[in-house]
Length: 71
Image 1 (cartoon, rainbow, N blue to C red):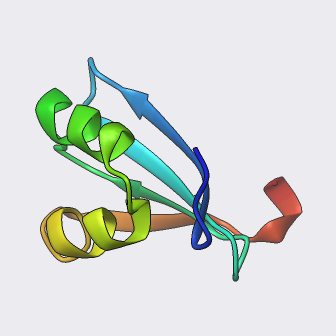
Image 2 (image 1 turned 90 degrees about the horizontal axis):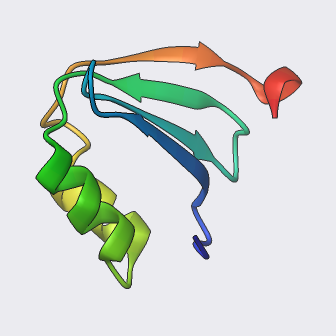
């Protein structure tokens, strides 16, 4: 997944939890209740950062999981 702002993602369809690692901070966040269709569209998006900002950030409950110690 080439992106200048997002280094990695992981998705659990059973729990609908999307994990996102950010390049600049090295931090990982988990977003709850993300539908599989949203994750599929995110993976397919040409501009991952823009899709994230428009469709995930501020749309789902989230929590910070770690800093750059767990890259």
